[in-house]
Length: 391
Image (cartoon, rainbow, N blue to C red; front, side, top):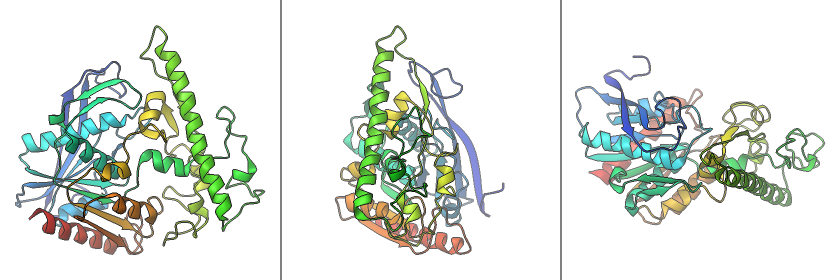
């Protein structure tokens, strides 16, 4: 099969389970049946009791170079898509944690793996760290960040044996806030923007290299905008809950979600990245384009996934509650998860069974002529770490 390394097999399967849901937030299933699309990639004729498990909130990484590369290096690898594969407009992080737990339970109970390594790639990093913190706490899940009852039993969130943070960022709500365009002050009129805060307005007197005073003002305005959206979401949700249809939802558009000074000023969070581009291309285009993160959202999803103050899936907060070995691998030319994320993730781990490694010149997806070499270095670091801490 294309995308499967030589001497490896790729087994596609589904993990299905039922849960009590007041309404359906994914296509199909009627709100009670959840199906997770999974890909197991493993070397042929090389059994193992250890499984490296990837899950990203919106999935789709079954053919990532890192996933294929780890399998080619002799590891058994599972990419499990959450129920929200390819669409985050209704995504609830508590339900994603449930999905990860169910994929792990299936790997242990049906496939027979006894040791689990959580591999948090990009946005899967905060998910992996938060999941492990939940698992170690042993209390399960009782509700969502929006306050809706949602129960996951502790035994459906089995703890892992190690965590890999690979090209990861601190959280979805954290990175969105760092990327929000604060020049939008009225969500109902996103075309009207404050020139002094608009990175893409040539009349803006604040130009690269940005002054510390401007950056301080800019970052504060980003948080303020996130909180304004959150306040509107809570008010709208309160009105709905007071109606005769309390389970209704409401969809909305968030404009301007790729306005990070780092993309235009290489002196901000300096690294080897290329100035003027982001991981999705031209940041000015992506800022209002259809593929920008959080572009389409819903009330409960915003609170669980994007709210600066309410979202719970936070790698920095979770890291201090994780007791098992943690590896943090960053890429110095990453134009999504910049080096400051790598350092903060590493520093947030409270114990000394941790290791940080930066791949010099590597991009987020190990692209470019040096990509294979960079990926090989990263995979070697992962292998050495697992050999040291799991054997």
